[in-house]
Length: 483
Image 1 (spheres, rainbow, N blue to C red):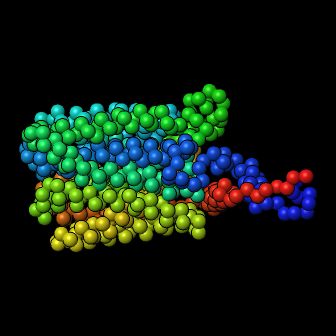
Image 2 (image 1 turned 90 degrees about the vertical axis):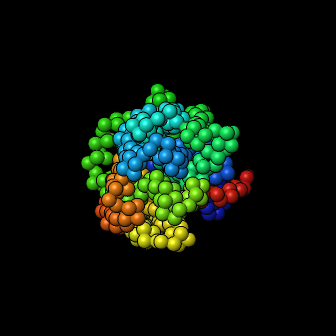
Image 3 (image 1 turned 45 degrees about the vertical axis):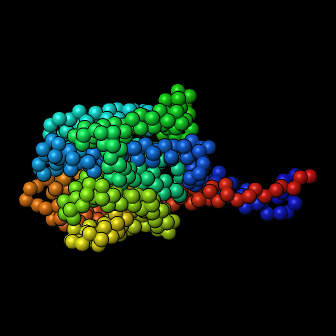
């Protein structure tokens, strides 16, 4: 006999489970029961967590390969006889191509799935990383950096894939953590590549050959992770898109293979372009600092190559927790203020980032400059996490296109910033000052991101449903007395 027949109240777990069923039937929220409602970092049992760890690892290696040459630039400059203007052009090239590739990669995820897309990008991207050592002139080096820049599109796949795997109550944290730990590659490469170079030179190789051989390392590791990604992930919790289409598990109304339609919906939404500008002001700034930090500290404070790389690496190392913190705060603000809460937090983080960058540009003492840079880095990466705490809610039917456009904004910002550091008339310090002022202005674009009352109510229901499911899953089942 059921428990209610004894006049007893239903168990808490039973009540929550029933409420979830009723809510899901009313809102058709298929993703709530299939997406993970918690992040269990130390488990690889579920496809959600395998995807979580492989996405950030893949993005980490793409970032490592993308900026692996940056801490070696003093050697490259001397070897190839590059001018300040030519170095600036290579910096612009390394991020410019990513704008286009990010715009294409989002719809591609919708069409063929993130698993195939990421695997292909890792394989193809590893080739220019390993072959940049063949460059023997400014022109060939420029082309190599241009080709390597395509792997920066890995960010869009990372955000897309985690958005497919995690429920609204933790998606901000999941997106921010995978992206943040991936961005960490930009800091680690500043520290590790000089060490790899030193190891290569230890075998008696000349410096002109050493930087070339050192770049083989990140490319080779990318190939290994490509194989792991193919084997251990799926496009979504239910499986891969092509198999689901064949079986009918992926319904036509939920299928985003119509990339053109999704792209048009994203392009016509002003909020997407507001976030494009916002992301230009945070991720674009991070890319710029990754490219110039080592050479900036090397020249301004007359440091050794290894020391300049170590200090520059501190900026990227903040990704260990800073971008995650942005996602966590975005989720916390959402719990209290809904989608509007996410927007308000994004504005605050970006505004403080701009102020901190202006302060960093004025520092003359090394110790103070490093301290201010760390504070600046904290808010750069929190702003990035907060941006993609909003992206999954702008248009669920065109997630790939929205993520692609917003992600491209980061690289567009880096291209624009690159011209500040290409000019022979501006010092790096002046360039940083103007860049900080631009970030402050761009922070107000975040306030233009608004949601209708109906959308806010629907997302609030999704959020609360995911929270309730998480509570139900973590509560010990109450025994039902048997007859």
